[in-house]
Length: 439
Image 1: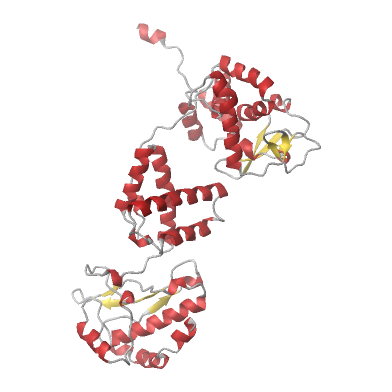
Image 2: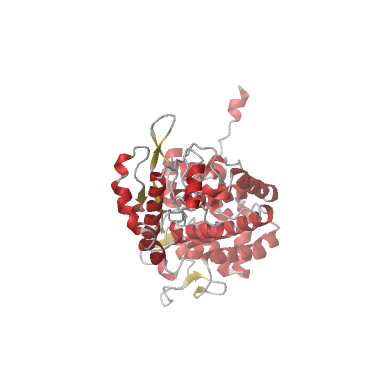
């Protein structure tokens, strides 16, 4: 039988009589239905207030969800919540109190089968009542369903790369949870202790940075669930971020840099041009991997690209990089600029895979050849050339003037962000201070 037949035909004739007599009672407010203005992505429920026997004030009771939010149409949800509301109203009229055990009422309802029966899991309890039982609490959404619900909400809000990261991290968390807390099945069973145990294992096995990344992702997901009333409290907010030391890429010495360029000119010209986009145009490797032929405007000497924390941005292409480019005129504008075997070709793979491919290629062709350690990577070229440029500008400018000019070239969003970056790569060095030590 459909949800409509089951609920609409269930003692519908008694509701009007109960409503009519409500005004004679003052211990509770009339139960009402919250529909979130018709938004099915949020939880709908029945709510009411009951007079506290001690303070004599009306107190808002816990929301009654029941199984209403398992239904995916407005009509179905409203129908079942209307039934809950009607049944709750009859119980209140018969003397039900959320502040008492209601033993007499239970006996009378069990003897009289004509009375409305409400399952105990939807009976409301006051927020301050410490005797709330598991049956009286809301039935939590299964963890995998809750996480998948967040993915659906986020798919049009974040980039595909971010969404993929959400999926990978939640999958790892669920796997760990099944091995360490197999009885935890629903979102409401999560606790701060469980989340701490998971994050502590991450930091023990990997690093504080990786642990902080998991904390950030899980925190975002749990916060979304809290905002949509599927979770009472996001415990991640009370777990602090650990201090971590980032693995920064070091800058190259001038001799090593020249040797690498000379080596790649013979061994791998495609990788060399890829590196020059990082070095001369100060792009991140992921940004270079996104470039298509149509993004390179030779006539206006500009480059359009998707930056790290923004939408499309434009940069001037320096002439020394333009001189390195092949003729792009007859190439397909939608083809990628960099592929494994050619400049301007088709490559059907995700951008993270493209970035990772060139990082591995750099490791094989350069790092192994020059015996470079883990402190050197593709990012090192960006750091090297920003340092070089900053020190050149600084020769004829004050530090503030030099940074102002540099911001336009590097694309940093603020002076503070640029200054932090320069400190991290040790671009700012003190002048010789020997004269100060002589005094």
